[in-house]
Length: 467
Image (tube, rainbow, N blue to C red):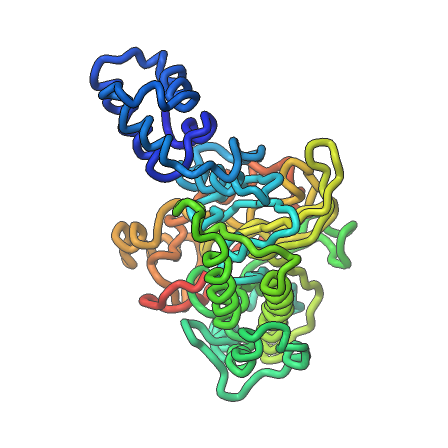
């Protein structure tokens, strides 16, 4: 038995769960009948007072008697895509579904451990927003631009393309422009929250920058399939394209930090395992401030990408043939049928791509594996969502310890990829197989095109990740 089984039996999080694990271990080591474990645990949960004089069961029973009542007796239902997801990511989803404001959830095939809600987690709540279920990098975003530059320039003029990236954006924690970019987003109302108001100048200095972590700007080959003509103005074929991934930079992180602390303080009795899932009611001033700040960060993240793509295209004298984009790390007010009843809910997609019927999105792989332009199928079980990428197969620490640049550079050369800069924690081997992830969500999206990276720029080694 594991924590998921205990939760389903009504064992509260915290000390009671730990004592349940101890009981199971001692029961098995003592020669107990494994086939009776479920029955044994259920009996103690049902009537802990009856077992306080039993030496084996006493610690578990006493922990149950002392435990505060769980937010829910059992988690709300959720659907999972993909096999072999790491246990703790699944448990984060289980715990999120215990919240009293939760009404439904979904777990995407790229899921891995995050803060509070797993990356790849989708959670619908009632009239409440959870800052950590949106994420630290609010409105992290993908943008693809197809340009009229000849495909052969990837081989014949790579230096020109590299200079355009390195001239027109900035990478790294705190990266900024001395000569600031212009965009209408800076004319928006930045007083919607004291945090956005305080950080407006910083946000302006960082406008058009890319940050660190898993954020990138890259040129590659985009192969548009036949189905794309019905959805866009682009004819099928192979093109040179620019793909970027970044979010709301330091200001988005400041918004998350401020409102998460307010949420934490509102629910001091939440079990430690649920603390990072503390929520803000949308009827409260704080909830409205956060929501308005989040919406502003959505506009700001889009403006970041707009500046990057505009300035790179202008640097190269290129014409844009097509551009596509989408958020993840965001919350939306949507209507969904849950339990047979249509409800107004708040859908958090933390590292998940909106995939309503006909909605276009971008799902990247890694620096040496393909990304995909997709059209959503509007699957209600996923709350109209899909994965936001391949998903990490290991932690950053593990990747730094396992890989070396000599082997990685050899692999990248074999794949025809030129890497301008990146950290070892972002190498392709640190990620899941994107084709396996896409195969696991065929019922969520239709693939319209495939992007293969060829010239990649990320923050250099040693930078703190901001994703």
